[in-house]
Length: 126
Image (tube, rainbow, N blue to C red; front, side, top):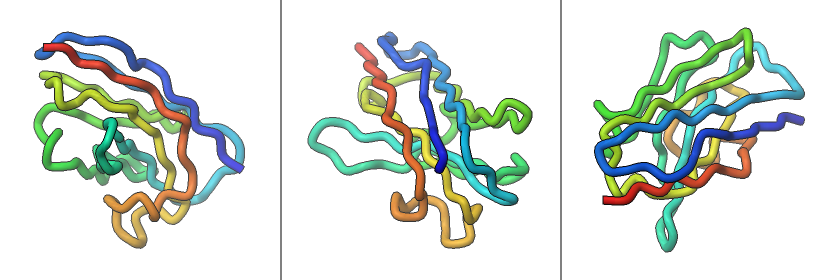
C-alpha cells in the first residue's frame, strides 16, 4: 500500500502564494507519476498538475498554467505544488495522487491514479 500525506494548505489572500507538500510512504514503484487534483464544493474533481517520477515530464490543468508549479524530491519521496497568483476560484480541497504506471494511460483523469491522499484545504479570499 501507499500512503500520501498532504500539508501546507490554509488561508491565503488573492494574489498571494502557498506551497503544498505531499509525502509518500509504503510500497515503491519503478516508474510512477504523482500529482494533484482539487475539488471545490458542488464541483467535480479537477486535474491540477502532475509530474513523472524522473521529474522531466510535467502537466498542468488549463486553469493553473503559468501560476502553479509542480516539483518533486525523490530522495524525500515528496512532491510539491507551488501556487502563485492565487485566485478565489482556487479555493478547494487539494488531493495528492499517485499513478503507479507513470502516465501510461494519460494524466488528467482521476481513474488513472490508484492512490489518493485525504486532502488539504486551501481557502483564498479576495
